[in-house]
Length: 407
Image (cartoon, one colour):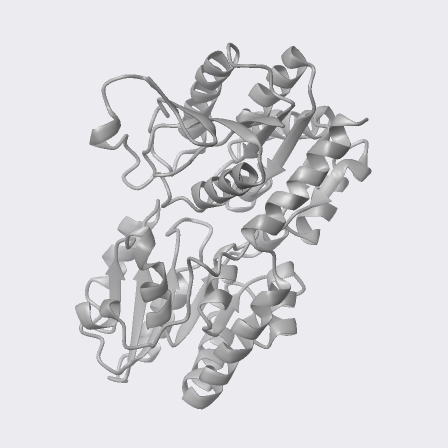
């Protein structure tokens, strides 16, 4: 098959989790004998500005071993402004549509959301080429933006919800990451049967278990302290006030350190409150090849998702934590997919979102028993075999594409 993919990030723009997801999917599809043409943005996510090596032209194309990659100018803007980002994504979508139109006719078009606007481009392209349109939903927009209060204008919300529903109805299939998301999307489309759950994968070839005495631990002078780590996007979806409260609570414990490893729209605010706290370290994203070293540094990982978001946003970082063989404390909607995975695996504990008292109580309990933390880590790794690998994810998409083409 020849597959046309529209996605916001692609290698080497891997600081965005969706860049990692789509790069692995494309590579796995190529390994299975398919040709893939990717239309994506010039690398920009880390600093919210196009990386210097990629500047100069608004469109850059290259032939690859799997097909081709065409990168367009992403119109970088403030991540904290939904309106500004929406305008930027709309402009990027129009440019992406323009560069994809002359490409060879594909057998299927796959678009990733967010940004939801990519779905519009994929819809038009699929109609132009008369091929199936598959809409991959990583986070459900506008639900996440509305729940966070980032999108509050009633007219803008009505438009976003109309666009969301129209794209679900136009797509031949809508793929989501969890049953929570599937229930959300099925309630919004006239044909619930088109919603298919294909979880993101765990790449155990990239994330390996390592000894806790890592180079990252040594480079940050962490010694033998218990390290409680949040690693990932530092955004407005995460409840970092819980880490701030916990750091204050454990201020007199010299054997406990909190680490926030990542970048994002909320990083400036995190830097501000963390700067005077001696038991908090904030660091930038490490290179991709050091992910095992970073994840392996922690004695306990944190997932911090604000109230209501687990039904529309799946914390993919959980899979990496499990693959690293480390336990997790998640502040997340109880009953959500992530909560159920943690419960089934025995890999950690969950508390209701945004509840600082419950978070600190459970954290205190976990940190009082390092042996139990290690046992949870063993259970985490033992559960990985039940999760999807990159090749299994590619097989699932391959079957879906073949089914749609035969209809």
